[in-house]
Length: 334
Ligand code: SF4
Ligand code: SF4
Image: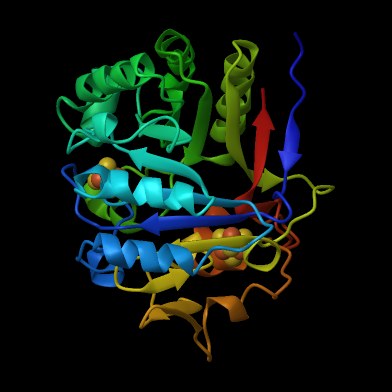
């Protein structure tokens, strides 16, 4: 069967709520973007989670809630939060590192939870565990099997860096064996620890050539095995349109300290466009992230140009060789 690649800019009319209910985590991955100084250290109470979820209900619109942390299953009330989000009409996903604390599988159900998403950064412990922690591969794979046996729909997120790109291909047979139905390939961001020399003095970033040589090929292989694959376009061709998600999508990245961002690249800076104050969603005025979304520049994503300009190449005439699309344009196949 031939797979036809489709570029999905966004799904009109939908809103995505990325809800970080705590920032604590049992792991310490080398590329973690969680920044407690900027995002807070508290775990939100179940009551607060319920009140905040209500702020994002938009009748007539599909809303996707993705519960995140830190590790969200460290929250003892995650299952109740999932059930509440479902009652409010949201499509609900939990992104876990695979540890599934507090008997999460027993306390929630496939009726409430639309997708349980696991993170693995390698097809075996030798690749995954140096990036995510000793013993993590075995725990995660065991819990994927348990979730499958209980009837949960599962997806898997693989964050590509220079340390695991060449092993991406070997994920395909593992995904098939585990029965994973959706595969998300992410590109590493220059945020949090990935930007620090502690990452081994070797850049975790991959070049455009490396990315293009591997990722679309492996995505097609996985799609040919019946898996739905999503990966960021990142590097746009001349004829491909660029749209900033901050302008054309309704994405909300909520953190425990009440900050609400629209742009994932801005999360390390106190320039959030919104804040939750006394259970109200308040738009903050002044020079905030949203003031940048409307700038049209030849490099594409404005925040990428400002925050990680070394990802952009220029030709001899000073023109960018390609535009960068950071967070929105995805290639979906399968
Ligand atoms: S599992 Fe997620 S939150 Fe925890 S350290 Fe790893 S990347 Fe960070
Ligand atoms: S990452 Fe770039 S494209 Fe995405 S919202 Fe931010 S500025 Fe817009």
